[in-house]
Length: 116
Length: 114
Image (cartoon, rainbow over all chains, first blue to last red; front, side, top):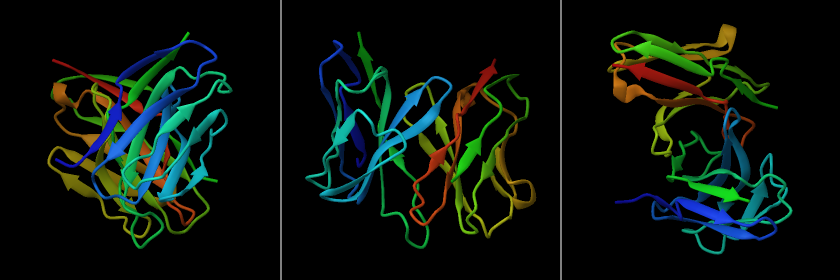
C-alpha cells in the first residue's frame, strides 16, 4: 500500500542535541512538507519541497533544517537552536502544487518529540 | 497573507445530534482552494474535501455536508446524526497565492458521546 512513513513514533532527546526525524513516501509525489502541531496552535508549516534538491522555508523554519536528496525522502533535523522543540511533527506529501488544481496533502502518522 | 479562523476550540455533542464546525478564511486572491481534514486520535490527518473559489455549490457526502459562502468568507462543515467515530480534531485549510501551500486553522476538537 502506498503511503507516508514517519519514524519513530515517539522520540526523546536531551536539550542541546540535534535530532533527525525521518519521512519516507512511496506515493511518487513531487512535493513534501513538514508541519509542527502544538496544542491550540493548529498546524504550522516548517519547510516544504516541491522538487528534489530544492526546498523553501515555511512560517517557522528557524531552528530546523531539511534535505531532499531523493524524491521519496524528506528528513527534518531539529537543531539545538530551536527554542521549543517539544511538539508533534507531521510530514505530508502531494502531487505538485501551483498547477490547475492543487492536490490534497497525504499525511504520515506523525512523530512526537520530547526534549528535556 | 492568508488566514483561517476556526473559532470553536472544542465541541461536545451526544450521538445522533447534528453539529456544525465553522471556518472563516481571509485571502486577497481571487483564486483559492479550501479544504477540510480530519485528525482521529491516531494522529494522521485525512483529507475530506476540496473546494475552489469559483464553485459555491454546497456538497453532501453521506452524513457530511459543506456550506461555502463567499459573501461571508466561510466554509462550514456539518455532520448530521453524529456518531462516536466522528470524534476527532477537524481542520480547515486554505491554499492560495499561486503556490497553494495550505494554511491551516487551529482545529476544532469534536467529542461525540454515546
